[in-house]
Image (cartoon, rainbow, N blue to C red; front, side, top):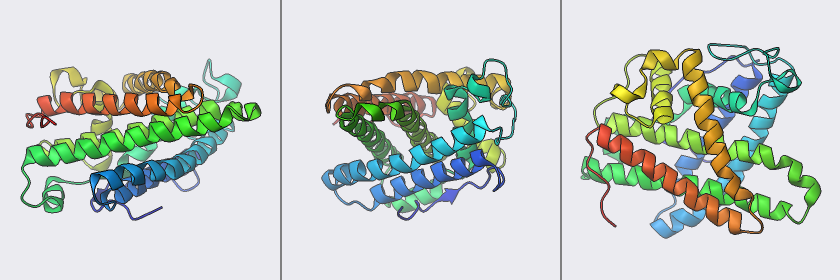
Length: 293
């Protein structure tokens, strides 16, 4: 899978016997590998092509992790938590949880393990660069990777148009794209906060929850519109994450367009959404705006 990004891999997660915890660890490892391979790819052109190749293999790993989490949910293997209904929750299809709930639980399980570097490590990785220049690099990397994930999903869908029986896997691929893109963006959110000198307070799990809340609201931690950290730790916060993931997955349906049109549309949509998120956070965090191309 490649070497993880050099940085602070926040510890946490569920026990080894928890199917959801195992899927969360697999998602965090996939993100670390994806980020690490991009950092080693060299010039921008090489990074774009390497990112697309890496996204394809990582997407397959996340699809497997998501399938495992779904099986665990259907059999009651994942433990209920704050905002997480158990397998007998009202309205759960087939005794499990809905797709939005499954994706939010998976992202929550992965968040404390995502490789988020602190300001010192970020500046050490970019010696001589200003904070604005470092922020530009972080945003460009995240946008490149989320676009690559969208393109990879579209590529898989294009192949399936020629094999109709495999179309049953499409929802799983959409879910994998959604949660993988979200995890890459949560890393971006955390590193922009760290770079701005406004790291989230608390221990590793609390910081991960705060950055996940920031991703959900698209506002910096501690701002008036962020909803507050405590609200994100309970039922209201879990519902907000589910709603954001469900909306994101709905937009991801562009990757299911025929042939390779879906790959192009999904790549463009993901890139735009990542850049928009970054622009909002940079304004909240008083980081310099993006450099004009």
